[in-house]
Amino acid sequence: MSETKWTPGKWRIGDGQHSNSYRYEVETVSPRGRRIVVARIPTPKGSPEQATANAALLAAAPLMFEALVSVLGCRASGMSHSPCNECTRKIDAALAAARGAP
Image 1 (cartoon, rainbow, N blue to C red):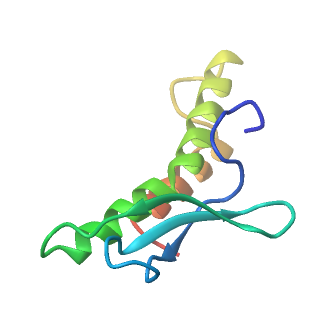
Image 2: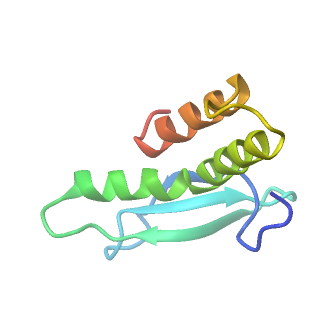
């Protein structure tokens, strides 16, 4: 993912308890160990579950990108219509993260 322009690293959900205006933060850690906030997720009125789902989906974005790049790589190398085992594993991990699984 070094060719991308977004914040590198594994994104995760952090608590947004530093402010009343947002519930979660999507964050990563720099190579020097510094916390980097990628995004802040507000709580839609009356829907903390939706804020949780939004944060999980956003935090999974780098994994989803990596899975899609892998699938395209398999297709470019002449593999069949079905993704290879490695691609399937990445897709499953990205979908689980987007659904909020640890």
